[in-house]
Image 1 (cartoon, rainbow, N blue to C red):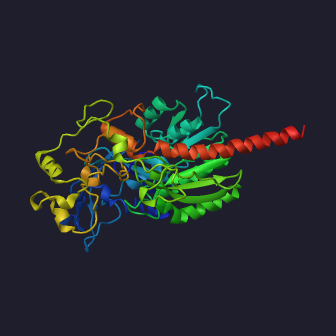
Image 2 (cartoon, rainbow, N blue to C red):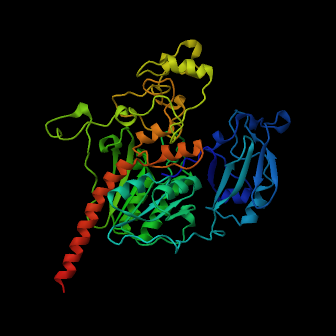
Length: 480
């Protein structure tokens, strides 16, 4: 899945009211701006810290804060707005176009059109990419990230026909490990998609995730429409959409069903736990499969929860554990192959040492516990927790190196897990080379589809595709 951009970029869909009144709605994005940048309702009563808004293509930098109303709630637009109409005119912004606000400094932001009807030039498939093996089924991977899904499909016997990913560091990692057949652009910029056997992708999940606001008008929730456009143009035998579980209960899912059925696909969505497919991690993901060659086929579990062992699954091995994944790694990070440590403060080191095996933030003494945790006495039992040697890990997210974000302390060492340990918990082999800065690689790892999980999905759909092609050949031969 493509990188988590929520901390550095927000996408805002422009409405008719925005164009008429010359403003940009900030509803749902107030967490993107520092608290000190919010001023009083009346500017004379008190102005917030000024934001610097660099208007791409115009060259001006606007300084403004965001006001609050008399009830103390933030208003949904910048205080200074005389520049907005000029920005709209420059790019001929229309209703439904999308504007990006990108953070380039603590108080500095860049504004530019992300998707407009008047500026799209498109990205085309290169004529100089390496040839494909005609004996293998082809796959297209959208929102490819660093290539976790494609890496698993490659192991299952698929050829990467085309992938699309907007993040350049992800693209370099993809090229290093999978194929040079990747476009470094947004999916909206792809002119057309070639025919393929399988099309997969995970549209950014921030609009659906339990970890963030579920905004009905969040443009990120609408990227599935471009996924369906790709399905219509590539017309794969099977397509697979991967996302967070809440998508299954969303209105968007109903629309995906309707649009896919119009194209002749049978659709089914299930929530699968990667621990049942050889990944040493409990990670629940929604898998939506559309097939025009028969009912969708889902992979059968390859591993079993040891607490659910019975006469019908005795042949399956137990879930893979943290011990299985990282037990043989050097206890002290050696800096090799992303087995890198952090430089914690003295207070952080004291906190690490207070957490016993299997413990969490509630094991911290009062003098070491942050004030916000003292006030919040319920929930969050994974925060500042240690992983268990004898269980799969919790879900690996993009900031796994910060134990305050979850159960990411090493089972026995007084430190968070390293990038390579997290990669192993995601099912990546040590031979998989990540390219980028520490934060970029953390995002690549945390957002990836675990390769063993992708491989099991790939093996299942490849069998269905191969059988269908074989039957089609038999029919043609019988007609000769």
